[in-house]
Image (cartoon, rainbow, N blue to C red; front, top):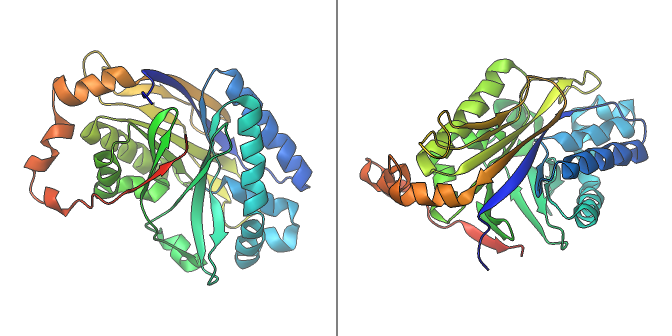
Length: 302
């Protein structure tokens, strides 16, 4: 199947609300997906740890306790992903589900985001490198790096902190991704800027498009996600004919809503072989380039 020449993306600047019931949560997410799809976007990106919003619906005892939050939200993972898959089918869009804890068979917790398609296919990427808070919280890192073959082309996911590590994303780029999704959850503006810097750098060095989606605003009902700062963005290399500054779209800091942009994949493909610079092709000329692990797992979601 031929990859599309272009695609419209929508990235959420998503506030975490103290929803009273799981039905209230479903109603909110349904509205967000409907509004995102109404922009004409074919892929909607929700942020890291957006799933923790469900803990509010499980009661204060759960929301205020980190361990209980992990357990309660992880137990809802299957239903949460199935709900998004139904929304993807109804609105004919791909959705990156807001990440959240999943539990392995041996009782370990991982931070995972799922990519669901309109046809009901589901792919999952776990976060590989944990932040200090996640380590203290008991969330573990690891898992295979995956590339998702979709009707929109090859897509990779780097959850928040993972986007700050170039060798990880280069593994995905070497396996052919053209679009990198970066869901994030950062407390301070400094954290938002780290993710923004990482996404822009990964777009530049791999000559691909990167989409960031953050949680925004206060959620003091939860010690896990109590304060959130960020703005969504769609980034490409700054090259003539693509973008002078590498920014296709950016939101207003901490203002809830969707940020949308059209990504010209055809122009990016041309860059990788004949642009002003040849970052993608010249990667192997740098010292240490042989450290790349080219064993990203390709998952067919078409």
